[in-house]
Figure 1 (cartoon, rainbow, N blue to C red):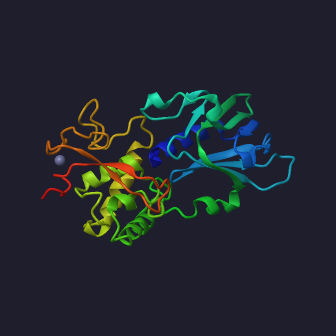
Figure 2 (cartoon, rainbow, N blue to C red):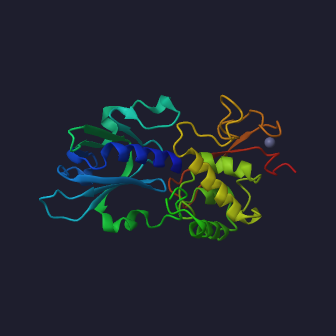
Figure 3 (cartoon, rainbow, N blue to C red):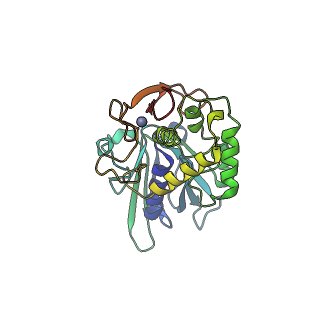
Length: 288
Ligand SMILES: [Zn+2]
């Protein structure tokens, strides 16, 4: 599942391509919306909310109607292309997508005549709703780690939400977007490693929940405009971007012990199937 920084970056590029332009083509290839015609609507902005994408539209100048939001989620495999270029970070092997997996196709013309095209492949949860009612889709989310309003209040709220799940495994709670929004599977492993705590330990074993929230915010913010995600500070050279994620069987960058890959159940969380998690048992206190 894409991390919040990926969604943030895709939204920024979509916003730059589409904001201010008027839709000249709009195909929503989901049964519920197949007949929807939004030609003539103007793209106001494209903004992320956690890992959700909100494309806000203004009604045609000559028409009545309230502002609408096209809401979507990338889930596991979704990706947007702008002008046939994929908006992904480093994994180019996933870039090719068959035409029939397109769920949203938008073309929009700017006042200067420039035309932008955006296609969303395999994106999920495509909904069209009144902008005033966005909370029906995203109101459940906890503080957004990449919110422009991020500051002490949201940080305290996220820390309190985390601490309130004291008995649950930390790794499970980190993926719960109601606690804080933006952490995905990669950051979950990296955050637990950096905090030297097992993802299977209960949240109550965390000495300072606020410090974990700060770290999550810092890492996502650091990576939100980067094409390659780095959690190691970029000091390790090529292939040294992450501490443990995707490194099963390889030596730990800190203690040289072996990194392990485990599965972790995800009850009650978006996309509830078990997900991989990577651990250095020695650094993360499992083998003491
Ligand atoms: Zn280690």
